[in-house]
Every structure is written in structure tokens, then in C-alpha cells.
Length: 224
Image (cartoon, rainbow, N blue to C red; front, top):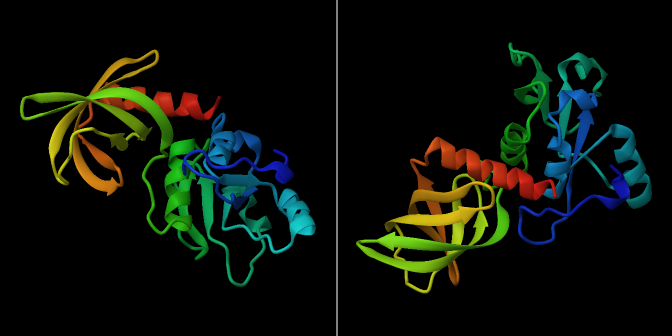
């Protein structure tokens, strides 16, 4: 990845300044496309020498997190203030002996696992899974009534909809929409927040097949 052209985050739904993460791990320590997808979500995973290049050009660049293969942990310098570390490890996980280590992921590190830990470190209101902008026709059902709506953004755990019908917060309803190659998705949902004029829904008791289909759609969209 060229550090001078770090991608802008699709998942935040607006232009963001990419957050820099230092990678002290070989390419095979990551699952395929993990780094590319996280870059599109606004997290640039760069080698230390790439970060030095960016710092030489722009100045003041410091990683918010280090992702370190446990076999290279001794190579990571101690610094003040310390930068949190996520260790890529085997089955045994991290020992906790190094206070810089805030989490561990089994190699090869997948996008969803890394995303969760990165969010915990870098965001005040962490998301469990990435969200992408969409424009999916959908239908809402509540109390025997049914009407058309549009899914404006989607994650594994919820979505943002634009509904012509008012939705009280805390309302339970059913959402139905189509995904390319997967067909009909049907989920129970609750209206949890407003982002005027739209409403955020949280999914409940999603079938494993529907959750898998949504996750596949997210990954396919982010890798285009």
C-alpha cells in the first residue's frame, strides 16, 4: 500500500482522516484482503518504514495502535507514552505480561476480529461490525401493517432506514430486503435511535444464514 495515498473510510459514510496502525507482522499473519478492507474503513495498516516516510513528508505521524506478530514482539521499541499493542498469536493467546498488550487475535487475523479490537482502542463509541452505505429497497411490517422503506446503511447488527411512516423509538418490527446473490433477508428489528430524518434499527435473533449473507455482502462491497 502506498502510504501517500491512504484510502478514505467507506464505513464511516463520510470523508475521514485515516488512522495509522503500525504492522509488525508478515503478510501471511493476516487473512486475505484484511488490510485492504480495513483501509477502506479508515484504518491504514502500514509498515514502520512506511510510517517513517509519511512522517518525513507530513510530520507528526504516530500510530494509534501496533499490530504485532508475537514472534516479533521483542523488536517493538518501548516508547512514552506507550502505543497499545494487539498481538497476532497461536491458540494460546496473550499472557498479559506486557502491559502494552490490550488484546490478541489468532493468526491469520481476520477483518472482523481486528475491526472489533481497533474500534475499542480508537473510537469513543465502538461498533461491533463495519457499516457500509447502501440504497436497498425494503419493506417494514408492524402490527399487521406493511410499507416500503429504504435501507441507507447496513451492518451485521443493524441498519439505517428512511421510512415514510413515523417510527417510535423502541418499536419492534420486521424488516425484509433483498441482497444480490443471497435473496430475501428477513429480520426482527427494533427502532433504537434517530439520525434525522432517518431511523436506526437494531437486529434481534438474526438467523445464522441471514447473518452470513449480510457479512458476505459487506465483504464483497468493501473489496470492490
